[in-house]
Image (cartoon, rainbow, N blue to C red):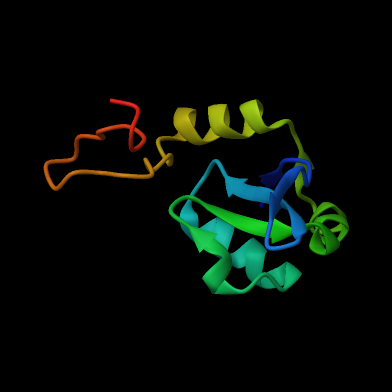
Length: 99
């Protein structure tokens, strides 16, 4: 089981956050998140938001440290990337206010 994590550089709610993903399956991702104590409510579409205080635990558990672009590339290549907004017909309209 290999999951990937980017550096905790994303601010939110007074903390810094990382993203944790799998390039195999969401089942693998959920199992890994359970192992490091990340709550299911931290799952968002295709990744877990991981606070900086869990970053070291994720790496010790075997998460591979990658840059954010590499993390997204792996999700897309695996067919596991879920767009933020998706219309019922499956089309993604893009980010709000950006077309």
